[in-house]
Image (tube, rainbow, N blue to C red; front, top):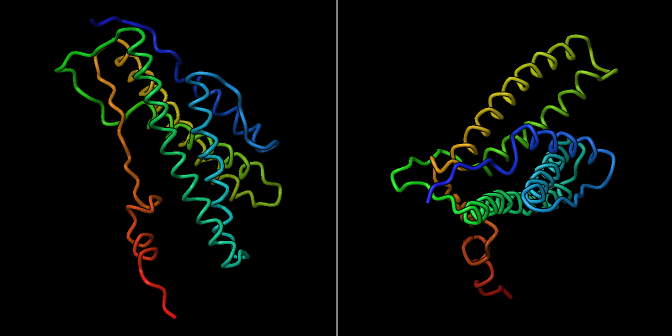
Length: 209
């Protein structure tokens, strides 16, 4: 049975939440307590936030080799959690479609990305916008630097508007039964000790005396 139904969240509501979290988490330790879909999106956004700042540390000219190794491991863990959160966001939406008995026709075309993947892109955009705004407002930067950052912010704002429009349309089509929602499984192998040859070969190789 196909039923036209309103999506559980709009792109505007999602983006407002992402923007709010970015600002808050620069003041306090990242956390949130939203239930349901908002909670899944909050988890995804938190891992992107943590990833962003680990990447900043990795590129510091003052960081030691030991610290880079530590940061690299953290990046791998956060990236795995980020990908898991994308899938969990889509899983929640699929469960919601089931609760509403919304089933797309067998011939309905799939989209090239899932809502979870689009929300991931929106999450990263909000991180970029926050940090670009920091550059625009830097008192120690030249006028030329601030103007360059401001011109980039115009592009980021346009990209955000386009992405939000596309996300709203995708969610509307999915909840109208016009498109199926199938989770795109990442199948990450590098963190799996049974899949990454650099790990399982090291574990199984005999130690030299």
